[in-house]
Length: 186
Image: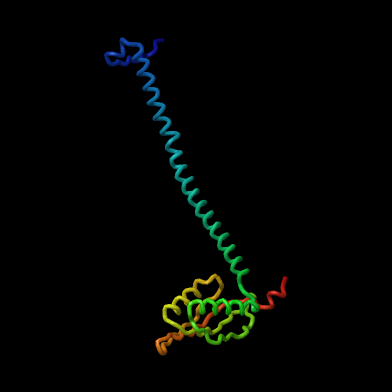
């Protein structure tokens, strides 16, 4: 039995005579084939996997950022809760506001506030009127300093009136105080 003959591959002119050149051509062909096989079986599937890993990584970064923001907000709220004044601290708040007004060359009238009724959550809202009189730039600065004060105090209403070249300010301020019922709890 005779085997069918394999036709011979005709090589370009320099490869038939030079053995080193044939070896080099064979090595290049093997490397090109290996490169094609690698790109088909390894690189292409890993590119799809890389996209999936990138999307998972982006999702995890987003969740981590949200968790970090939540922790920061939780700390801020805890700090705010400890910074809420009690009813005993009201004279100190009023004194600070009066000192700020006088430092800005404002004359301060009588300040009125009522003892609030306890609200839900252990907090009570306390509003009080704060009359002052002075130059407009000084009043404007007082309002700015009240708004940016580190104390928990807000401006609810502002009334301005001019009389004899002076500006009269009637501002209604609001703050929250801890109710006495919350202090009784441990």
